[in-house]
Length: 123
Image 1 (cartoon, rainbow, N blue to C red):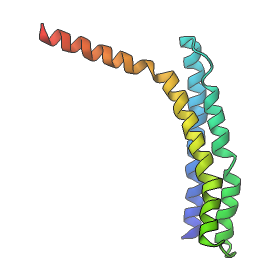
Image 2 (image 1 turned 180 degrees about the horizontal axis):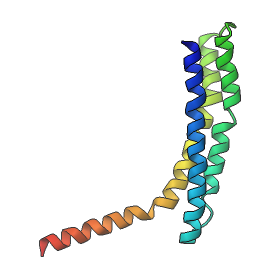
Image 3 (image 1 turned 180 degrees about the vertical axis):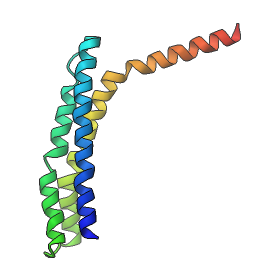
């Protein structure tokens, strides 16, 4: 069962990394079309923060699968947070900022169309 979780720990982050690359490519084209600053670079920064700690996390995961002794629980938790959680949190934050910059205009459009429909319904 450890091997299944190891495989899922590889596939999940890699799929998110591919999604970040896709969003970066789409953001570049959207930025060119709307003449926006190059916020798509934030997706690539996010990709780096997402991919960079994965080899260390995989090594830590494989040491447990190979039967090597686990570190004491407190040290293991600190290592997992430092190696996986913090960089991935930073990565998602950068991606969220880029997404908000590129797609923020759509909220105004949705609000405007809703107000327009409400105005037509009253008259």
